[in-house]
Image 1 (cartoon, rainbow over the protein chains, first blue to last red):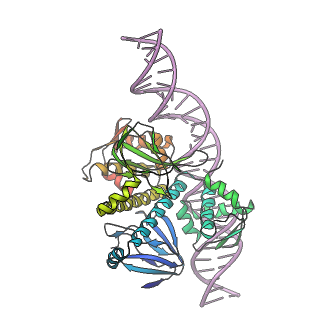
Image 2: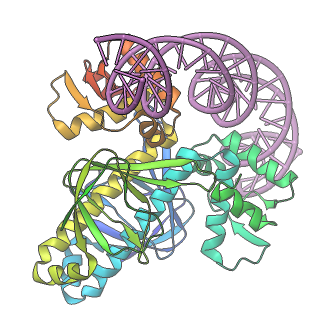
Length: 199
Length: 199
DNA sequence: CGTTCAATTGAGTCTGTTCAACAGCGGTGG
DNA sequence: CCACCGCTGTTGAACAGACTCAATTGAACG
């Protein structure tokens, strides 16, 4: 009941009939929506432990694509009802997941609507860092499984602006960039202040 | 168990301890979040039939303020548990509300991240129109209970840009503006195409 | 070693913002 | 009844910042 999804492949697509709920085991998934002319908004990155498969009226709401090689656990919706009856705790857990998701989306709406490029990137890095340790010890290495293009569409920026912003942070000594797929945070507090919109 | 909230007053505030769930009876509520320096993002407008009071770890996630005089129905969380046991259907209904909300927030994230001012305003008007009739008959009058400032913070624009954009639509003959608090849609199809990002 | 794709950098443009002035409207009080 | 005031919304001009387009660098792979 687990399935390997290669990097770039899709788990499901928007408007496709929803037959399964998925739980991410390893790797990372991006949820994205497209405008008619191709513009894309990545609404979330989902990793180990997260549940995906959001549906409305029986159809998925977004495209779900693997950012890197990813393993998901596939749960048929039919059997889900059965589980729920046997174990009501699952219902509670799923509801809790939805609350988290609402919170994250709201958080992200603030980012998209109000924040400057520097604040957006800062928020992105801090949020990623928090997934690793809530510990505020400086010097944390943040893995970026996705490419700049995904980050750009997530933050509502262009690839160029993301790149320039990271370069700026580098020159300010706030981060180091050992490779294209990881960023070392040197001054977490500064980033956190930016993320909150401190003047 | 119902309560009148005057225009501009708040139903609850972010970080306040969550003791109630609310259902909007009449009027309109805006959900908003603030950055430390005062920038504001309105994440949703809620009207009759909508449920508000989103909480995480026992605390509200946003400010909820009345856009105009509004009546809400207040449900203590304590008694909610009891209701849920007696009528499991309520659980289902609440879950459905959450799914709707997720969908709307995602929809809104796309707007904030990808769309141009004209597309944002077009989407806003079309969404409002859909609340009245899904009927695609042109010529619909959309009531705007909120001020330009709320619209601006909702769409991630400035008041000035909202105003200019509406003026532009007016000059194009797509809408008419009988008063500051209502907009008459003349060409709904055009607005809908803009909302979908048609080139 | 060459090819390819992603990321960076640069230059110029454009669009939304900022700052400021003006208009419209409703309420208040003389 | 009308003049005044405050608030909201509109309009104008100049600016700044992100975008676009193009060129360059860099890294991964055969």
